[in-house]
Length: 226
View 1 (cartoon, helix red, strand yellow):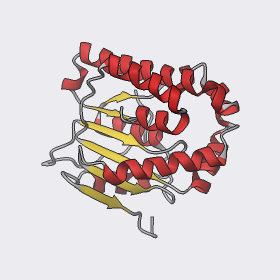
View 2 (cartoon, helix red, strand yellow):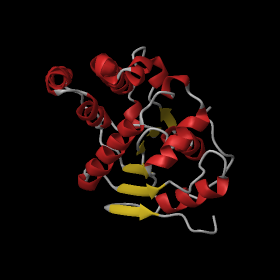
View 3 (cartoon, one colour):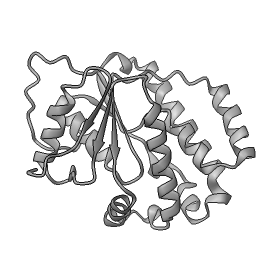
């Protein structure tokens, strides 16, 4: 059973998105929202397994030395997750993912030098990943100082050496990517003042707005009274 608030959302008469992907930079709250949403809607949950990457802590300690193996591990991991879901016909059901497959190339472009990126791209092309397009993408945004505070507060040893400059570059890359993203309905959420980990009212109002999104690009800013 997924973690999440014990909240009931009235979905009567609402056509629900069957595949919701949640994205955003490190520390913004992707996994927290995905777990809540999977529980609320009774959906399967597809989570990124960052803790399984043996190169990740080395990458945060020395990005230049460990960038390529870190990125290739994530690429193979995400590719295998997509393949497993297709074999199980899970894409015929309903699920929430805390990542979009596109993020793999986004991270690669941020972390790899030109030669490494060329190797990565050859591997990516050979895998011929056929990931389904979401019915809805939720992009969580927050400024760098908010991300840094949330990363510190969760006390993940692997993340203790994340540099502010890297986080800002990544945050900028996300903003650039979603500025042009148009392959699925998109909800851009100002998550700086949202406490999705502890405040059920914040979560409920976000979900109620999310369920109104059917097409195009939308923006959600929490009200000061939340």
